[in-house]
Length: 79
Image (cartoon, rainbow, N blue to C red; front, side, top):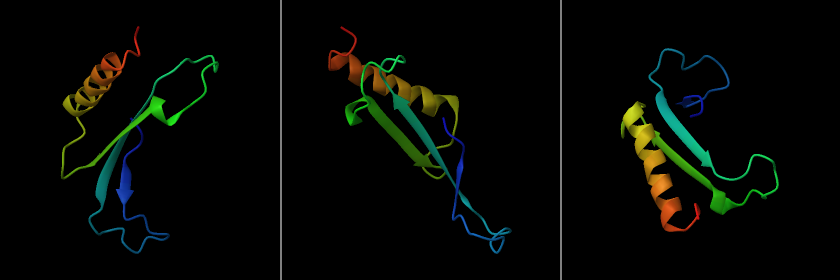
């Protein structure tokens, strides 16, 4: 899980007291940590949402990881 992204991101403090939108990003990269396997777009999954869709809690993170594992098992990745 990456750091929360606040939008808009102004270059100065002109909108400091205005309401900003939190955006969340969970990126899952599957592969070998030794670097033998090259990084391909098929190995990377990005789940992103804002605070109005869902909050950032354990349920949302676990759902994304479960969905990723389910997709990988159907594709034969774990065989």
